[in-house]
Image 1 (cartoon, rainbow, N blue to C red):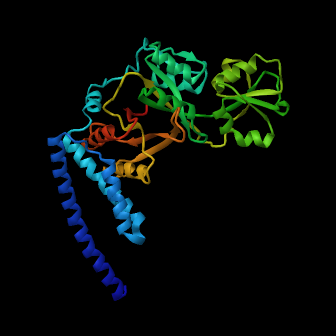
Image 2 (image 1 turned 30 degrees about the horizontal axis):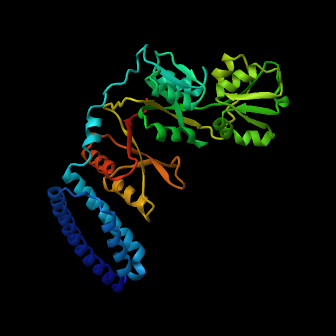
Length: 378
């Protein structure tokens, strides 16, 4: 290492020492600001003041204006987090979480389950895995499952939220953001599709394939290679049932082996999905909040202002608390042009002090904020 580089690094070390001391002084000042705001009934978040500071920083930093602005935005986020903790923000969400049910009736025979699709779907498999002794009621659409829970016809609903190959089920995300139901648990189901048709049908004669949009996407390589005509249907099992009722030996359904057997179809091909490790994640949703002791994933939704770095500044709060983000999804807000809601998954349990503090702060600060649950895979 050259002497010149050593000198530069020594200078950087000296600057860093000064920055650490100055950062600590600034956070001490933030504590005093919090005390003043508490005594005078002032809100923690003052966007006008923050914008003024950031504009000034960017101007003074010259060619380093943009990164300096981002640095100071992060410092302000951390400062606000400290103030929220001191002022005891988020009492409403804290009380809601502390009063949550601690046990889900997985083994009950009488619990009412609303399951998407018809018997034989992968959702049915997820329902049986989670509630092995309950007989679910089936609903033809995602909307119908949510409506059943809203109306009290069911305590829990089973819906797919994402697939390892085809990605997010956007209709379900939109409904989650509309209804703001809680997530009680999740279930991961291995998806091994088969191509099934009426008995006596030969694979060579099949020219049309019918299934749910997600299943069609998951098997797109095969469909494209055979130049098959695609037809979307409400679910994989419903597609199997429909094919069984047709007098047509050119149409086949993409469905589970269970659905093919249930509706008397002949399996022409197995395991032809694009990804051999194909898996669908299902949510178990409810109007009631359940948080079990072994919960290890948290879901939230919120909106953000249209300002530079607003998403980054919010996400840095999770990084500062050592929280691992596993999913972020943005969806358009109904009735508003080019405004979005963000759906966020991260690992952790709400009983962790820093996690609770973060959620309490965000609940007071972010528009459209909802805590959607702390849960685990069943």
